[in-house]
Image (cartoon, rainbow, N blue to C red):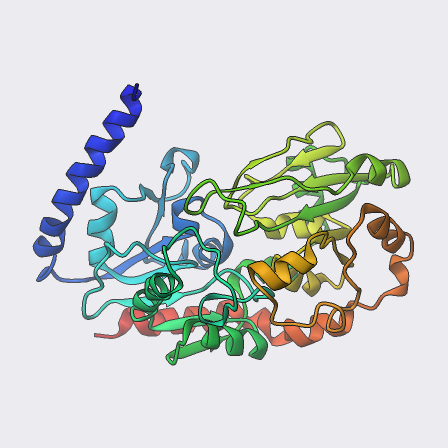
Length: 387
């Protein structure tokens, strides 16, 4: 028997679907608000990532800046409107500038005079969209339908953000995008260039860590074939935390699952903390001493700090051949080779000082990215002043 909440949600959705065409018609000839900027991060899941970094740039700019989020009550100090509400659709039709880090709802019909900046959410290791060699996406019935989802999205883009030539090349190829690219860095990484030691102490305190704690950050991504529906994945890692803790008792372990992982094992105790709901992953980079990941793009950003990162790729053959494939040679293009066992991770941690991570950082995070804020604000001001 359906719950009252499920029935109510269905009724609300039905009303919205019938009302949206009238919203689009009502706002068709309405004027654009040249002072309004709308931000969306991960379909409204939070206020983080690149849109969050841009919000920090803009919050004292004089513009009206609105974040669309699914749970506005979680952010009482931020100007938020509920994602997918009628008001959110009206704001999307009024805003001069829309900024998102992933696909926007197709129900938003972009108007003439509006500008859309797509920031995306990382330098890709795993192949994307048109570069896929195999297809395992639950969000579409066929690869042709999947391509169309993104092709329709890309038609709305006016600018695409990128941190380096490699990212520009791969995102252009993946999205078949021929428009303007702002190759200036990612706003979410600004604090990795200009942090202070007291910032690290404050973040550790917020996370319940001691100032002197050593920290391992474990940040795996999802697997396309392990899903509970569109955009909802489950994940169980074979990384043996007990063995890590036994070998390195001085470390606390932070676990940061991908935002699409909605079901996972619970390892949390006084030495292992699940930080998946923490909005700003840059804070987690700052407090950690080493990163363990797999096919996530997090290591590209993390390398800015020139701290060590390890690759626990226990299912590498399946991932490479049956799920996604890679843009890089994971055995030869990384400063450290991937391993498939906990013992391999332990051995690399014991010899971590023998590896060089600086050259990788220089290639994928040019030092001029520290000026991302000034360059992006200049672009945004030009957009907002244009007629």
